[in-house]
Length: 93
Image 1 (cartoon, rainbow, N blue to C red):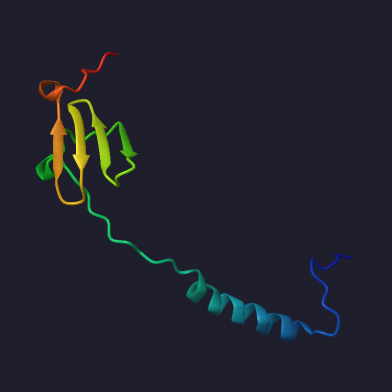
Image 2: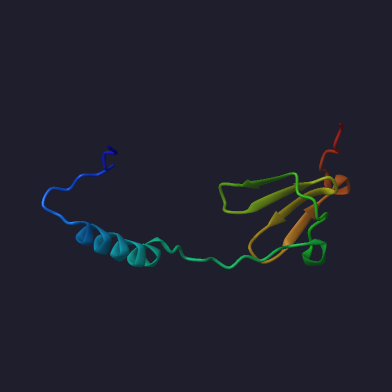
């Protein structure tokens, strides 16, 4: 004879079924997370390359994107690119 996984004294199968259905109905309402807007950035937006090797968040709140073509500083509105001409060290593999 199989033993139930959860034994609730004084409850009928009908009550357990009702409770399970209620939880399944309410769970998606509670578990739904806020969806934040995402915008993909490309070279058309000012990135030096569409391939990003690393992203770093600095203490001033700026994002630095490391690419094979150089560094890009993102201030939340625009990209400022730093290549070897601006003093960024070239990559050596």
